[in-house]
Length: 147
Image (cartoon, rainbow, N blue to C red; front, side):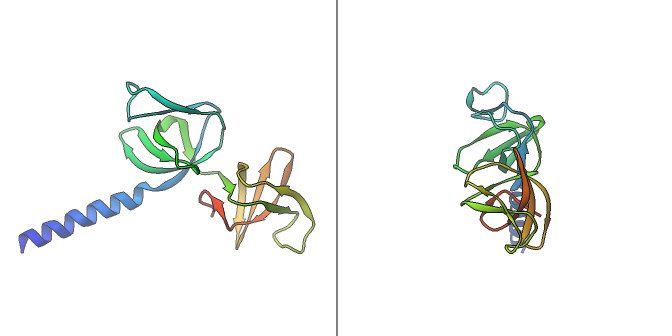
């Protein structure tokens, strides 16, 4: 009986921790090193050069976050280089509209893979900004958590 209780408690802790670890974040800086392990002593695996790029945290250890990006690249980033999610990437081409309806004026065509800064989301639409354009897109087929 005691063994069953231990297994249940251990499973609960494992699964609740694992589920709580997976969150979307954004890069805080325009140059962020990704390392092979959770320490400055590990070598740099690659460097991101895109501020606000959305990434997914899949694990954490102390002040380090293990991340994965849209292209399944993964590694460790120091928490000081990350911020709460404020961006998204469309997984296919989208139309940016003036208002949150397909019956409003089209503003621009957004190519898949473009980083969009999320201003506001309501119903199935998100108000986004990118370079010279600001408008609304449907929030389906987006990489990054939108609320």
